[in-house]
Image 1: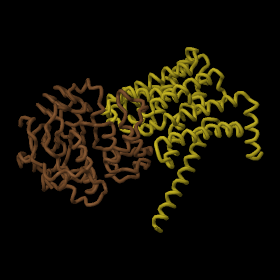
Image 2: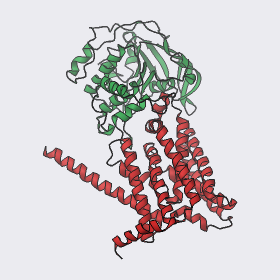
Image 3: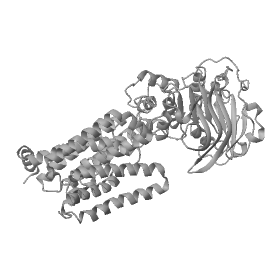
Image 4: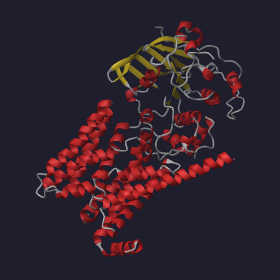
Length: 293
Length: 287
């Protein structure tokens, strides 16, 4: 396994100057070309995993010797279905069993981390809707709660409006979530992840079941946030519109990290390992994991 | 005798008879608390958990009858313990959890039937808890119900956002750092308290109905979670009050009557929402 490369500035994706997100919904095809993550000095480690094994029901499915992600990085977790991408993300967040080793988040052991408000999470679930009608505002507002603020008495409507604005969903706060398209629901969930003031954002398949225009909207929102110092870790089947933003890829296979470094240094054979069936309509099996559009 | 005359007699009886006033107060308490808790259970897709806890409460009632202590108070203790056990088992297991829950539920009702056979009063008294006997509600019962209902409602109002967040997306709630296990145990406890408040009104066999049916009706036309809560409480209170009055006027069992009224409101909501949706579709097609 490659040693983690902590100090690389990432591939040269500086490209043209950032012109800010365009949430008008027009000219989606042009967005990918204007979107690029400027190289910036990396901050302290925000995620550290050491000699850790993760699994479900006592059965180990992922082992990570060493992984360190620093503030300001944009890291894509790649691999075929079942390679351990989601398990790694859930392990970092303390959502699944850790059999051994250590995980630190924001400089503190995950078990001792009290203030999680800087951490935002977009789960893999396809729909934001449940059996009972929920408005977009109610859904997003739920992201303002924390261990220290479990009563919801600090309700901050300005933050809700700002989060919806960032993801391009202004004006739909009173709308039922189940009346939104799949792509809009993913954006509403992204707004929920952002509303607490996240500095570290972990996204699990943000483009699953999302059409191209909505993918571009999500990428635009993330692009804008990256310029405000966000650290982004994202599980992906294909980089798609996020490709210009990504500074580092971590490729997993059969529960192990096989590569950790800049995209342009990744061994081609790892990037074309073949692809099993993707229930969310992922890339063509003939294209491998289809990193580059 | 015409329906109008029956209703008039029933309403005048409310002012005349204490037992009917107590029955109506108990019905209103249940009408408010049951859907206020039920809405979170439905969002968690645990609509029938109230039934299971009701089964466990039967053992509590029987124990109270055997010990000759207040069955309602003993039922509170046993139902809360059972609810916490249910939540712990559910959180610790996956497929085997369902089996464990089934064992707990059937054990609850079997234990109640066996225990009550040793009660000095025999099994006759258990029937009023199984099927409801709102007209036998005493002042003491009413005080216990009022205290429990106040505790349940105050908790739901105070911790509503946290209960909603956990019910809507447990994994996300964990990432936020919310004490998910504690909140789930709290919801299970609220469910147990609501079951005990409801069992004299509709009976443990129908206890889930007022937690589920008004919420199911409300979600057909409500536009938000909060709106569903409010509409469900209104429908449940209407069901309970109308059910008590009809059961008195027509000499019918109160529990079954209340639930049938609630189901009637659900069917009406289903028809109206279907007609509204059909009208919208026709409008879109014309446009």
